[in-house]
Image (cartoon, rainbow, N blue to C red):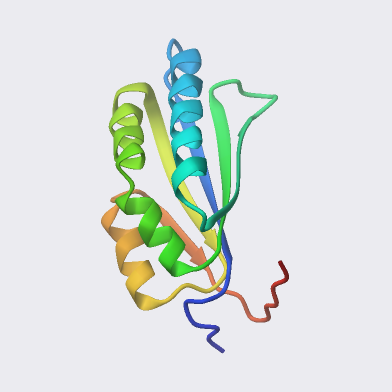
Length: 128
């Protein structure tokens, strides 16, 4: 069963930061989050959570309104700057997507060049 590209979906990014770069990384995320919040109405929710057992590991959770919102996110200049900063400050980065996304969005996700796992929904409903 396919739900198309108009449903919200969740993206989890699992990130590991270089040992001496945690503070700098959190500053980069805060700067990027502020820019995204101001410019992307399709980003419905975002958190950046530190693993209490490993201070170098974080999980960033995002809820996108739909595929179009994710594609706008990838095209946003502060997001490009974030990925450049991650290349310098981070050690690892994987992406998990929960929900159903269309073919265009899947193709865009694959161009990021990071390990990607997409778990498609079997049943779904959304409320605002």
